[in-house]
Figure (cartoon, rainbow, N blue to C red):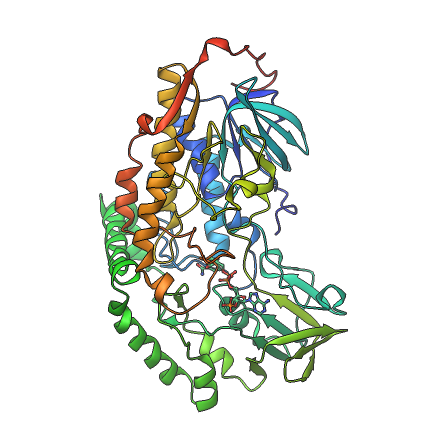
Length: 514
Ligand code: NAP
């Protein structure tokens, strides 16, 4: 199912005005809607371009799609799920969970589905955001950008790809009408998506060419179904779910020491990964091809037990020569070899540091987020507020990303901050907050100092963690509980504020519950 193919929509009409408009309804936007509702801020609306909640989990329906973080941690702390069927959930189960949370929280009627925000501009005159969408226009006092980092598929810039003669699709826009049975298939990309797709389709296709630009490091995946007694215990033993969650959290958090502070401490992981290659692949040439040439952790560490066995099949070729061009239905590598295929799957990731959404959000001086980020990369305060963009909160914003544990933890930390900010604005009749540029500078200087020694910067790889200028504007470089501490309360002293006195009241929306 893609963003536009679900039939599950059950939303409302676009209001003329809302206190809070949330753009996007993945884990972050939906979490914001639930938490705002719990805090008594009922006048909020979620503008969602697809026709269901779920974001990246709604869109990524490729075969084998599953999460690399155990389910008991990869879920909201306020909606823990004793019914996960296995330790690492698959995409359909996660999407059902997200949908269930939305239903139980009663926030679906605050959603406007199939509503693509084309432009959101801060009006200094009216002290509010003016939004133009595919479903009409509206205004909002506060804008929450929850459009996600893994939302915009990135297509490879290969000469001739636009004229590929066979079936072509991106992993995040899987074409379920394309029957790959008995077909010759090419997969470009060996990141988290590619390494799940290939094992899932390997037995049905005639042949697969896997185009690997950089070999990833792989660790074992300790995935298994939960037994019935375990699931009974999760449902009935008080505190067990929370304990399981805490245990997973603590175990994952230990990786931060190596990733962010002392990259040499990643060596034991590398030894495990090397042993895995030796154990799972017999062919010395294939072993050589899959062995990475950078320090483990520099790129996202992947977990899988079926990737190397899939590559070890006779009808699978791992192609490591770079792709020169595509001609008709042939992929031609730099050495001149042409390999013909019926279908081409590009598992080439997402536009993270250059999201098209950044072009659509314009601040107080009329400049868009992308123009603002053009000098020195994406920058925010606590990953959430941006100088020049009053009353805007970005979820999963700059330097809030993680490779080792649950993004839901970071999202909930940001939600604490945002809800406290909106509470504070309401309580103190503040109608405009804008983070002070000096505060943003100081915050980012500290972040970049911490990042300088991390494996992501020193490990000898390129990755989507870095932008085109080589800045790491995506990752949080510390223990996640430190981010939780930093975002516990809205620190109004970091902001320039003004109060409501001069703003014209906007008529209430007809039909909106407000
Ligand atoms: P990704 O990690 O960005 O990987 C993209 C892959 O495509 C890389 O192997 C990259 O090679 C290759 N590539 C990109 N452009 C190319 C080109 N022009 N020619 C040849 N190869 C090219 O994307 P992803 O696999 O979709 O994963 C993105 C993120 O989504 C992950 O990091 C993770 O956060 C999340 N995710 C998680 C899961 C999970 O939990 N299991 C599953 C899927 C996705 P290089 O390495 O050389 O750049």
